[in-house]
Image (cartoon, rainbow over all chains, first blue to last red; front, top):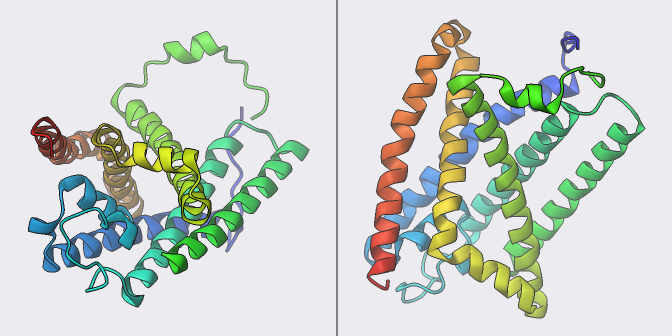
Length: 139
Length: 128
C-alpha cells in the first residue's frame, strides 16, 4: 500500500475537496436560515418537532402541509423557498455522490470498473438533480 | 492500493479508538444520508406523479418519529463532524488537538441530540 499521489494545481480532486468543505458550510447555513425563518413565520405554535426538522432539512411546502399552519401559500411556498430548495439539493447531491465516489475509490484500484462506477455515479447525480428540480417546481 | 495484504480479521482487530470511531461514523452516516435522500427524492416523485403505494409507504415511514430519531442522529453527527473537519482543514496547526476536537464534537452533539430525541419521544408518548 502506498500513499496517494497528489498533483499540484487545480485538479478535479482538489476542486471537489474544496467543494465538499464549502457545500458543507453552505448546507449548515441554509438549514439555519430555514429554521430561523420558519420560527419567524410562526413554527413555534404551528408545527411539531418532526415537521420543523423536515422543513429544516429541505424547505418544501409538502413537508409542512400536515401541520397547524392555516395556509402554506402565505410565506411557506414561494420563489424564495424554491431557490433555497434548489441550492440545498445541488449542494446535497453533489456533496453526497462525490462522497460515495471517495469512499468507493478508497477500495478500488484504478481500473475499468472504477471508471465505470464513476460514470454510473455521475449519471445518478445528474438524474437525481433533474428529478429533484422537477419535484421542487411541481410542489 | 488494490493489493492490501490485510485480512478482514486483522482489520477488525485494529484499535483506532475515538478518531477511528469518528471517521467510520462520518462515512457511514454520509452513506446513510445519501441512501435516505436518494430514495426520498425518487419516492416523492412517484408519489406526486402516480400516487404509487410503495412510494407513499416510504415517505410515511420517513415521516414517523421513530425514523426521525435515526435521521437526526445521522444528519446531526455528520454535520457537526463535518464542521470539525472543515475547521481543522482551514487551520491545520490545530490538527495536533485532533483527539480533543473529537471530544468537543461529542460534547456539542450529545446535548443537542439528547434534547431533540427527548422532545420527540415525549410528544410521541403523549400521542402527538
